[in-house]
Amino acid sequence: MINFDNKQMLKELASVINQLETVQTELQQPSALSAPAPTVVRLASQWHKMVTGDQASSVATQPEQQAQLSNALAQQLDRLRNSHGRLEQLQHDNQQKLQQASALLLESGFSPPQANEALLAWSSGAASHQNQLIQLLDYYQVALTNSMASNIAQQDERQKNQHKLCSRLLQLIDDLHFSGPIATELARLREQLQQEVDPDVLPHICIQLIDLTIEGCRFERRNSTLFLANLNEHLEEVHRHFSITCSEGQSLFEARTHHGNHIAGELRAIGEHLFNQTNDQLKADIHLRMRSINHILSQSERLQEREQTLLKRMGEMDKQLQTLKQEAEQYKQQLNAQNDKLFIDSLTQVHNRAGMDQRLDIEYRQWRRYEKPLCMVLLDIDHFKEINDEYGHLAGDKALRLIARTLKKSLRETDFIARFGGEEFIILLNGISQEDLDKPLQKLREKVKSIPFRFKTNSVTITVSLGATLFKTGDSIHSAIERADQALYRAKHAGRDQLVID
Ligand SMILES: Nc1nc2c(ncn2[C@@H]2O[C@H](COP(=O)(O)OP(=O)(O)OP(=O)(O)O)[C@@H](O)[C@H]2O)c(=O)[nH]1
Image 1 (spheres, rainbow, N blue to C red):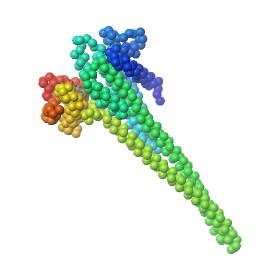
Image 2 (cartoon, rainbow, N blue to C red):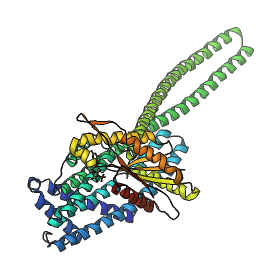
Image 3 (tube, helix red, strand yellow):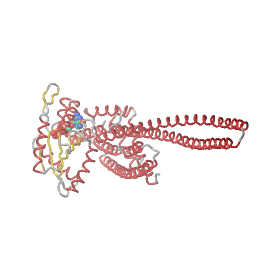
Image 4 (cartoon, protein in one colour):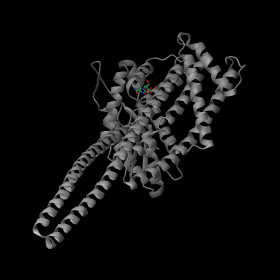
């Protein structure tokens, strides 16, 4: 099924993952852990070699070498994004083929519909982590560049980048929904990221996250493959029983017809004899015919036994089909739950960025088609870092949860809210005019302000800043986000706890 081109793409991706694994193995050396700085330099050199193929190249410590490395990394990421785009197309094509195959299966009536649905759901969820991997590679590149900035003048910038990167990584961890040991490891990294993280350690954390994501994908795929193998086995078993039952049913039918004809023949013969024969001859003849009928009857008993066995087998087959249906149903529920999780932020239970991308795409297309007003709001919690620093990250998490819940409750059913980044939310309101915007948004701001937070016996007031804009003629999604972001920036600079509508 895979043509040459596809193989080439998969090979490319596999080679990048292999190289990442090599880098990661390097990192797991005890010496690498105890000496983060040289490790980063070695990593940089590995990437450099990987990208340029320049085996003789030494460690990239000079600024021009660092710039070269950074360029090379950017190129590598571009190639990866290209491969990813083509893989997505491939995934789409395969999904269509799978849909057609499932429709055929469904028409044939041999496969339970749930099994088809499970297959479809499985195929649509399979590529869900590729985006996150690419994002992680991006972050890894930033972390690497950041850890190399040793110059005093760059310290401020370095601190800011570090801060932003930690927030993004935290968000990405929230969007990963693995279970078991991988989830435990992710929670450990989450905790680590919430503390002060040394810039030299951050690339190491990125690599660990990449490794965990790859491992998680493998685990999910193994589970899906296992399920499909089981499903296949069951279907084969059902099919085998079905064939036996059919041929047994057919042979029973033939035997019954044969016996019916035989008995009818015997009875007809008796009738004729009754008509023509004398008494003695009649007795002898009837005796003979009775023996023949007895013989047929005992054959008929054996047929009945065979029928009983057939019924039992059909009962077993029915049970098997029920189990199969239940398994497929369970799997479907599991996949649905997993699918929901893909779009829900686990910390705040509002939509995550992927959910937002999906919805924004729909709203934007509708806005273009029907020109019904569509408003985008960016909402950012004020001085959230202080909450974390003063009361700890757990308190910060709790505040995030409460604020998200309050916002969700204050919005209409048709409005949409998603967590856009660490302490930032995006809200979409449709069918609202510029003049009507101020009131509900000010109310939203007031609602958050009035949440009675208590941390370490202190009463705390948390405020939010909002930047809002309506989609305007010629807007792309990006330009609208830019405008809302600018409005938010102005709200922050005007002293926070403000709403600015552009
Ligand atoms: N507890 C917690 N904190 C988070 C999470 N995601 C991001 N943060 C924190 O949010 C804070 C954001 O800080 P800044 O970007 O400096 O913004 P701020 O302190 O809110 O300041 P202004 O936005 O300028 O008012 C950082 O301390 C992040 O660590 C999270 O999931 N949980």
